[in-house]
Structures are given as C-alpha cells and as structure tokens.
Length: 214
Image (tube, rainbow, N blue to C red; front, side, top):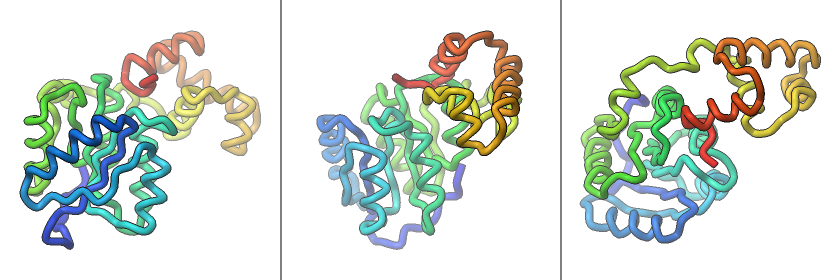
C-alpha cells in the first residue's frame, strides 16, 4: 500500500465518490462527527471526481468500486497519475481476491467492505489518520492468499481488462497497436492460464474474483 504521508492541512480534506446519493449523505454525516475531517467534494462518478480534482485538490478520496463510468480500480489508476495523488480508501461490495490485491498494489491505503458497519469505516479512517493501512476483517484472509492474476503478463492483463469491457479481438489489436494474430495469441494464453475456455467462462471468472461488478 502507498506510504501514508502527512496532510498539508489542519483538517484532512476529503472527496467522496459514490453514485448513491443516500450513501454519500451517510458518509458525510459520519465524517462530520470525526475530528480533523472535512468533506470538500461529493461526486457521483469517477470522471466527475477527476475533473473536480483539477481545481480542488484533496488529501483523501473515499472511492466506491462500482461506479457508473468505470470501476474504482480504473479511477485508482487514474489518480496515481496526478502530480500529487491523494490517499484512497476503496469501498467494495465484492469479496473477490483479485480486486483486493489490485487495490493494494495500486496503493489504496484501506480496503473496506461496503456492506460493513459504520464503525469499520471509522476504524479505517482512524488508521489513515495514524498513518497506518487498513483492510476489512472479512478480507484479511483473501489478501493474505495468492493473487490468481499474478501468473498473467502485463500485456495479458491489459487484454483481460479489455475483454471484460466488451472489446473484440480486433478492437483489442487496434487499441494495443498489434496484429490481430498477436492479440489472439495473448487472449488464448491468458485463457489457458486461467483455465477458461470461452468468453462466457472468462466473464464468470471476472465476476467471481471481483473484476466485474455489474
């Protein structure tokens, strides 16, 4: 997980990115009850978050994994490209091991079960304030285990992500600027490694490990 840095502000400036208004309201009420926490942005999509951060930097983003315009992992990657990336707490309703490993490898300072209690989120926030990382108790065994995606090469993982998003082999080849045959080879190798034999099985796998949330 990313090293937790000192805040540049007396209060931690926080953005909440979640497409459910009632959930955002609940989070804001919870945060308002905590010392040194200030919600400065509330967004309902990942792209809105990225655009808002251009004008309003924050110290911490509480980010939902299931967003209308992409996954939390997609936007965690995008946040990492910023000049001064904020800390990220990822909320997820999935218990898939791959998504948990990915979030941690991308630098999330906490991964919290969305169906968990408010006390658990408070514990995560307090851990972040104390410059510690946090993983929901429900996820600790999964995080301690092996990541099934580690056996894939970087290019095979890119192909996997594009298949999950519905891209054809021809579209994948164009996006990666490789030949159709090369894209087909990458696709075949990743399916062999994951022991799946059709796109339908691959989508089932993606859903099972938490890469596909809808």
